Amino acid sequence: MSVWNDPRVARGMERQLEARARRLEAGERPLGWKVAFGSPQAMENLGIEAPLVGFLTDAARVEDGAACSVAGWTNGALEPEIAVHLGADLEAGADRETAAAAIAGLGPAIELADLDLPLDDLEAVVAGNIFQRGVVLGPMDPARAGGDGTGLSAEIERDGAPVARTGRPLDVVGDLVDATRHVADFLGAFGERLRAGEVIITGSVVPLIRLDGGGAYAYRLEPLGGLAVSIAA
Image (cartoon, rainbow, N blue to C red; front, side, top):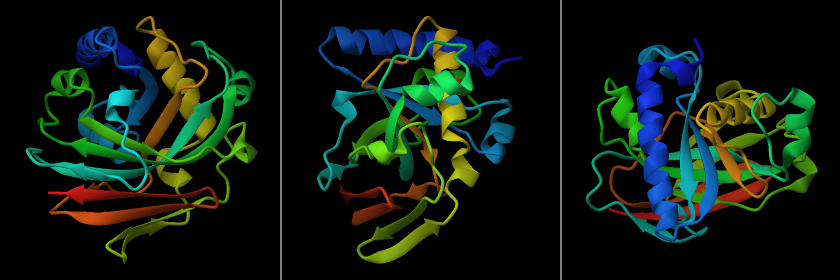
């Protein structure tokens, strides 16, 4: 059974996309999509066979180097990610060659999340846009058109001190072309599609980093560049 046919996911996505439509009608602009719970352990814990998908709008965007308050959040977390930037629309059912051709480049991204719901209520988690609260996007590297993620490494610091690093981020998030195809297929099941100019953030390359108190976080995704965000508790 495809993950989007799971009744919990299907009901949650209907509610999620209704909320997205209301926000767009109120003036927000679409920014892209997020992949969530893509690690084998996360999928096993949730009883799903493939990652989930949430949405991004411009209202969630945090500028590189800016401060973000997490006052009132329940359980804040930071996720350093790889962003796939789309240069062409992509329909559900696209083959690998077509999906790769739709990828204009890659870049770094940071997602800010608030894990404010129990994971055993999967419908509510999906309906609530899978904890999404903010996103920081770096510039796109067009040399990575086609989704080539080989040779990337990631390092995260807090207040100048190392927090996490990996020399093999694709071991965690998987093949970026396959991730793009999955998002296209997932959205197609609900009457949506990937569009040129959108971005997909593909999941945390390290275990999520809990935001216990404030701090200045710096993320380097070599050789693509870096991002920073300051967290105010």
